[in-house]
Length: 231
Image (cartoon, rainbow, N blue to C red; front, side):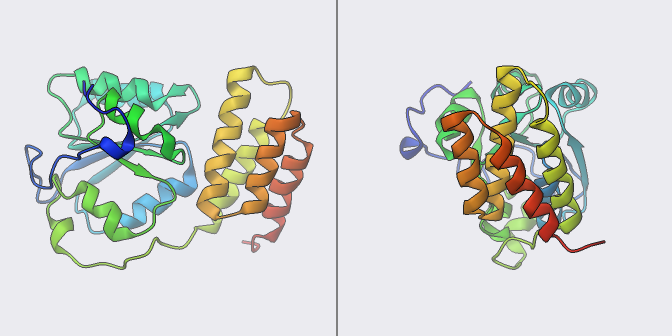
């Protein structure tokens, strides 16, 4: 486990090409991510990988995957429905054989130091600014990503995936939720708002933090749904 990272500014990432077992093609990448919008963006940014992309939406499902095989790389979102991705990263870091590359992803950049201390090799904040920057994180294992040119901007949002995430957010806010589930719901919506660069939605989340009333946030989510094109 990495223990020498006191702050994000002190982080020194492993240089490209130093991670063992480079895969030219046909490798397996496990994506542990609860947001369908983020999953779709990552899928598009990994286009041309030539391998297998497997997805787990929860810690439990990810652990089932890891009990059966050791992928060539794992991307772990830090906010998941059944716990923190930091716990999964620590588990992966202790496993033998260890996954060659563990990448933490989060809409909360302040968690970078914690992710690295838990054992992640690299950290990437959401929203993803460019395809090139994202692929460079995976180049130690998939070196063709360091050689191939691609667009230097993130792919457009998928309307169907966005609709699913908005409905998911509304569902998470329904009823009397335990404190940990309410915190997860607000984290999910915060990341979604940042991915969309939606300051109104982000303000509505912050308002819930001040007064505990989710009514205005639910209205903001429904308005965003109404603005989506019909399919």
